[in-house]
Length: 495
Image: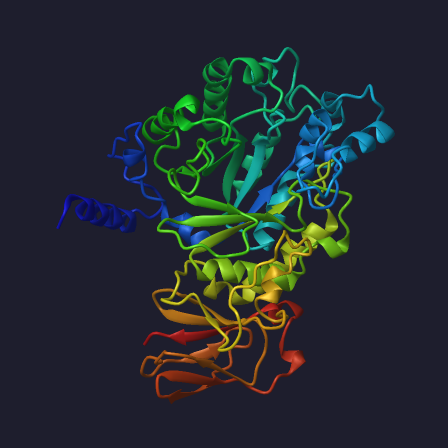
């Protein structure tokens, strides 16, 4: 056995042995080889569903053209440009801002209007529990540099730019952390490495890293002991210049969360999907295959921050969201689904409704999601048609997964079944109801008990050569909650 294989085996066995924390005896060096060897705590791989929260001064205007991120309001305003491959003229935000607030109203004036006066952290925490989320990730600081906690580095641009001194006059990170940590939900914090218009970032990046970024992120970790540190805004500079490896070595060796913290992969230009903790994707229609735990993040509509310009039709249906979750979990990933509260601290009703709808489905079918791992095949395609429909551009209605399952374009195959498993059972999840379902190239274990999770009914099974046919009962709507119809999970015990 060569050295690489030995090292892989050692790391694999170590990952199995670590349940809620990682090996405290290991000392990690500031090299990717060493840092990448740190196992991901099992709780993260078991969680499957988390809630992302984008909240800050951009929640005051809460507006951008459909198909753009409203949390980028400051950048759209001050750069007078919009991404979109020619779809936008570039002056949409400027025109909206000048008409609504006036040309003399600076983005920094939004800080005083970010009141969060209706924010009740216990209500938020209760909602996350009901949603079936196992972790959340709050934007402690986005690219505008405004911190949701009292921090002296936030003020080094020459004026107060944090939630304790401006607007709400509250420690929003601290309040939500305290509320969430009273539940079984893990508390995570998003942190942007860069800031668009910080004067040091623009003129002296080395000083920005040494005197702003590093002490600020250490302050965040030390004060709030997050379960997840979700880095972003890394793409303009290599990790050597960010001193990311040195920071991560401190985080894993010396910090107050060295044994428990989970980090992602956004630590420098070109690092994403190569190094760090778990890998991240964002609005990717195809499900990737990684050799590390991974997570897809996306909004319920398109924008992460609350966008008043989005209509109900721009939001994913609950069925689309559940199938998106199932699709991701079947390939070993987590879904981090975003909500954007308003400036007063209220989560828009449509976002609350979607979370509760997902939670209702998980309450019935969570056994097929939480703590599971993929089968050899993550899903089963129909026999005819081109596989893996992907739109030419972002599908704003969020219905890509519906095109891949129940509403295909002409000539395209569909995913008939999704598969997951745990130590006790296999699970086959159907996007739509059928009289019977055939799992190809599968032999049910002898004496296996096969049940429909939504009703608990035991199902009849017949082995047809290499395939298994499972007969479903006559469909009776009165047996199902509305949420049960988003997807139907079949449980097949392993013995």
